[in-house]
Amino acid sequence: MDSIELAHNENGRITGASYISLDRYETVTDPFLQHHVVLFVIKGAIDLTCKHYSEKTVREGSMTFLSRGGLLHIKAGNARTSLLVFGFDEVAIRTTDSLVDFLTTHGNLKGHVHNTLPMKTSIRHIVEGIVTEVRKGKLKDASICQAWHTVLFITFVTYYTKAQVTEFFRPLVSSEINFRDFIENNYLEVDGNVEKLILFSGMSHHHFHKQFNEEFGMSPKTWMLERFKQELIHHSSRPNATTSFVASKLRITDVRLCQLTRKYYNCTPMELIEKLKK
Image 1: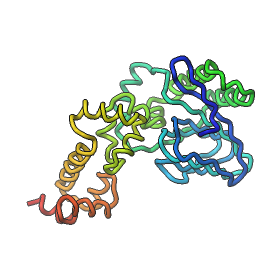
Image 2: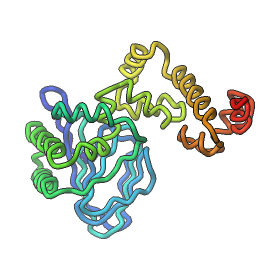
Image 3: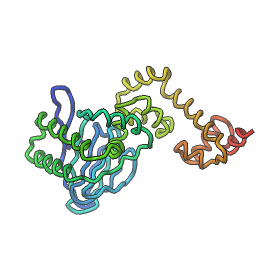
Image 4: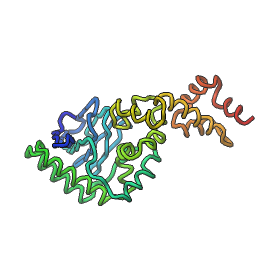
């Protein structure tokens, strides 16, 4: 968001924040987030739309994480709604070995949920401190930005469980820890759209394609098509498979599944299921 006061430290890392006050039904829109955001709802409630969901209500005392690369639309649900938007390009704090192991094992096993979390007392104190610094105009100082960045992420891994941290920061933590796991567990989210997968990863086009080729030995589009067909056949071969069952496993609608089976196998999903039974 343009309103975030961003500061670059000597290593080029970006951290910044913005305090926003809104009346009821007032809106804030950013057509393309340039960085990751933790959004804290200090007072009131908002309806939030981003690349992962539409009009999700986030209430007072809660926070949510938004990864860069998509539309952001905020509509205040109450008068005198106030928000703190904390923007950053990477998590500077490396967590404990046990937490890294946990994230590697569990960080990619679910779809992109982008859960909210309640602000515990420790987080509330940090938010209040950052708001004070923003109002004084001190967040333009890179060293102060970095100090708040450090305190914020240490607090996350200290006062929230491993599972909460993992779910809250998806897909950021999963994509930074294990590229192969990120691809294999999230490619179904994008329905064959390479550009969308790159946005989910938070990587540059060049870095993404380079790492993908090194890891899989082919282009992302070719790999996703081959992997999708393998998954389609696997789930269609399951005992008592139905169109809805297969579609749910592939995270697509029944209509979309019909389109794809027609395109690749010239038959309906049920016809494919019957053929695989023989």
